[in-house]
Image (cartoon, rainbow, N blue to C red; front, side):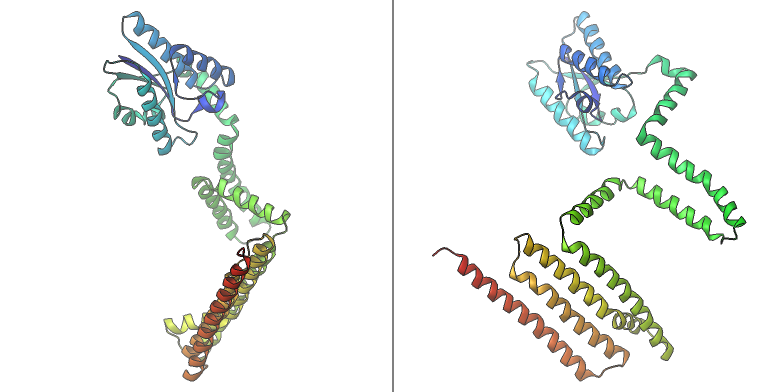
Length: 361
């Protein structure tokens, strides 16, 4: 028995017509082809479906036992799409009520859909591949029309025309910068912006950025304290970085520094600001958890842990730079350790007592 398989790797059939896939049977495939042609007359998968129906009728007229089916992947057309094609083919083969061996003829519209041939061949012998090529597309006029239609697509237009427009604007912008006496580094800035845009598009970060923007909008409108505390923490981290660099410059003014001393100088100047950032952000998170009814006593350990770590790092960095002696470091290490242990035990006991009170008597 021959199985005519119409392959639609990016699932235009399901996305544009709402048909459940796989589509099995001549009438079902013809109906899906008409529905897809109605939804998008320019979609090449329309021709794939009609070619599958035509090939089915031709084989039937020649006395072959034949069935036609359309299998799809997903919109990403990636490895996951190949797996979905394989799963749908398994369902088609399981539904064929025949005791004969089954072989397939694959119908596609191009190389992208043909990438799943190994997946199909692993499940059923393949007797041939038919690539559907629309005759008019071979003419120069149709090539112009195809390019025009591609550039009218919003996604393609943004991918091709925006980088091209930025490239064309670099020279006139640099010329204007020279006329205004601006530094020539503006060319580097524009090139960097173009590079960032290309990386942004190439890595597919649009959805990630949109997700973070939506998350920020929800935080803004739901009154989350963390939105404010994160901004304050970011400012404190920036100040801490500047403080660390200033501390490094002061240390270098006194003597040459090794790698360990450089790290110690950076830590010594920045640690108090970094600790303030950690305390601020943790208090904001604790507040939001309390307001949301998800508060647990152990969350209060976070600011105490931050203080403990800051005390230890400040003492060690001061010792490395020669600002403090060894007894000071020992006292600081003891205080940091005791502070962390005390907070852990205190809030663990408080949490256990609250849980016992909450248990029904």
